[in-house]
Image (cartoon, rainbow, N blue to C red; front, side):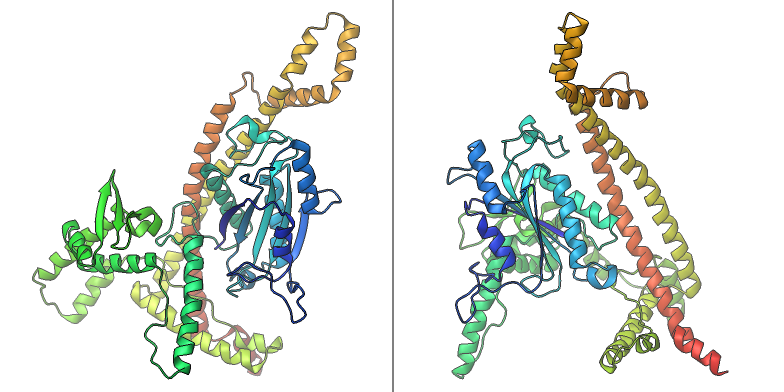
Length: 538
């Protein structure tokens, strides 16, 4: 699941960004790590490239541009923007993602969405928590040094001009996240929905507060154990994490909103509702924490929905339950079971004989044996849970493939329409920029003056003529306005994002069902290579 983060920096030392990307740093203090001789430690593996810097260093190129345009001279000015694309750790093993491939994707993303900016693109093979996730850092100078086409996330004329600064607005972040999702979809990489929030919304600040708190707690516990004292707590929780847990416990017990409020009040937490939004005030705070900062599970709609489910469950428990014969009950429940794809993370079984033939050692073979047993159990449990027979599994797979093809068929026309609208938008903008030159030609009174004028502004007329040819090929007689095109693109993008979520769900469903079918076949008939060996022995 690729994630996308943004950090703005007011640090005037552009070299610090390159130093962080190429040398080891303490992730808590952000200070460079030093060896025994007091020298910087180079990172073991990374890929790095600069863009729009010419032959100069990134820091030197940025400072020259700032001096040329007289920008980024004040302390409060945002000097650079740092974007991070983190890929799923399983993309390397399952989807063939490498550091070089991620670097190429990062450079392409930077060129498409941050044109005209001096940039440095660097890819690291692992994160600070050693989870194995390949991630790309894109650091751009906030100043634009070239005039660029109007991109969908830009809403002001200054967003395209040289000498103006990059603005990372909410609309821009939504656009970038949608583009990251589209990139992962195009490259067949794992991806989650970045546009519709999360159940637990953990900010960068809370994440590092938890990391630092856990490190301090581990040191205290180590000192206590060394002194022979008992350890009371082993896991550090932030204030927001404790609040989330308290709210979840209250939601597990309550059936009405009043009861939910009373349970929280017993813990000193008051719930407030304002303009249809909930906020939670803890005893140690004067300003309440909004549900938006905690996560989607804590907003008004989610809370009321869960309370309603609790009330229905409580009513069902109090209702008399008739007794039936066990076999009849099983048949009834089996008929009522919804034939959907399992949501568990079932993985394919490993062909151990084939892996041994490839040269895998005994350690891998032991791991594969345990892995296969786990996947057998998970597959059988899923078949029982969802009431699938082998024939029903085949039918469900056929239905899932049909749904996947249907969602793909819906998605492709919208993607084509967006691409055409963007091309038209570029041509309209290019044609509009030549308006003054075209008007100047009309003012020339003689053929000789008009010819000299065209030669003087030849590049502008080439652009205008190319745009006119494009309009004629598309049969456009009246040019649409920029605002109307932008509104159409935004509408189509919203439709594409909604359909993409449907496509992702259908694709995951097909994958799960195919994995179950493959595992069942391997369980019933044995591993393919072993089966072939038995046939040869016969």
